[in-house]
Amino acid sequence: MLNSRVPVLASESGLSAYMADIKKFPVLDVQEEYMLARRFAEHDDVEAAHKLVTSHLRLVAKIAMGYRFYGLPVSDLISEGNVGLMRAVKKFEPERGFRLATYAMWWIKAAINEYVLNSWSLVKVGTVAAQKKLFFNLRKLKARLGLYDEGDIPQDAAETIAKRLAVTTNDVIEMNRRLSRSDSSLNQFVAEDGDTERQDLLVDDKPDQETVLGDREDRALGSKLLKQAMSELTPRERRIIEERRLADEPRTLEEIGEEYGISRERVRQIENRAFAKLQRAVLQAAKSLEATAAKALPRPALAGA
Figure (cartoon, rainbow, N blue to C red):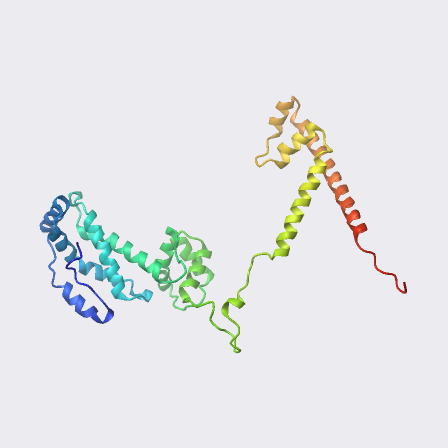
């Protein structure tokens, strides 16, 4: 195991002692690092791997310190970084000609980044590359713009940051709000009477059941009226309307004209005439339904009856 004799940072209180311990491990020169990496790659030499890992623990600590402002324990950041370092040692190829520190730096940052994203909030903060980039760079860019308040970010500043990170302005504003607020329970009481929870005040922007049902019935009615009206057309009129008005990718006048052996202008005339017939038929059917519905309504009782 690569971590069998690697110093362990158990808590924040032991940070100073840990930093002193890792400074005892010597920094490797180029030739020694190359030979150790070859021994581990070719012979699974655990002792060689141990020297490679311990000689780079200071690099992990330095990188982890750059993430301390996210409010997470430095001991955890260092531990996750050490895991990334061990992965880098396993995959390191000395023949490529660069130093282990250059290669390991990316594995260390990746491990810490993943830990921060998974631990910073109960809500997933960044699930795509653009959101992750925004999460880890927003505070730095705000500082460059002189923005230190935790409130909403000004529109012009949001646009500047969005352009620099190749994200949308809304993404910048939303991420800023999420980073400015800590998680809070939906069951937290917010009223003086102690009976109202935070979740009771949440607004649901989705349409209610009555609206959804009404929209569904309107669509069904519209489809029924259109079907009835289409029966009033001739086969050629119906085909042209379907190809020109109802298809996802409407055909051109020229294409339909070639199919029927008529000019594009003639196709246009047939289309316009058929569409007018459709409108009249739909309107007539709708009036008929309204009249039928009106007859079905109960009549109000006459006064004095």
